[in-house]
Length: 296
Image (cartoon, rainbow, N blue to C red):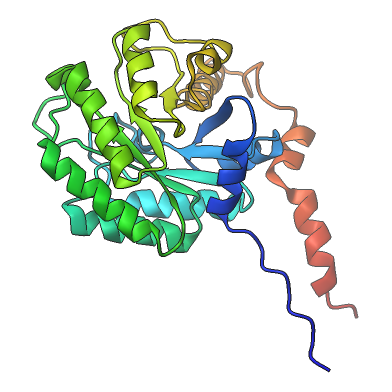
């Protein structure tokens, strides 16, 4: 008698597609290391964004100015995925770390490693030696990068988020044309960076032709940041918060350092030792290790 065939487990991309099919805004906290991913999953979130800006802050102690390598970002993904395997990760693939062939390598690597989705953008690399502005590739080259990403994504099913940064340098008409082009190429999720107003947002969402639109909802943009409720009403499907965990973490570290400098043992905002112990998983370790203890 043949053994029953085991049921295949749905993949991370399949699970993310199911989440995106549910009503309402999908809130993606931005994670950057093991503990941020673990806490995000423990708080009940199904998805998270592996943010390049947060990883740059964590690994380099500096700004997000295209200084991170593919290897550093991929290592951060493995750290995040290892700490919270059930969390569906949208990985920041930046510009793909080179030409269309580099994009394919990047997409395949994240797909094989278990990412649910990957962001690819149309910025020029290497970056001009200034923190200002985001010059973008010509439209035809940008098309080929997304075409390459979508082709490579077929191997694992990983979703492709196509981002255009051209609004500040080339205008909203070009940005909307690129979103339409990315839809034609098969991108799963669309992202217009730096919209000037609600009218531009509406145009970009319409250009996505029903595919999910992504938005950054952390404060700090030149225009007012929509609330989660407002973003959903505008038609956005996914909202991420790059400073949502990072900024409070930095504030906490600054408070801790100030307390030590003042002669105290810890900041008033510090977790009580038992809560810190539980959060870090010492009890879970002991429970899992019991099976392997040698008696006698």
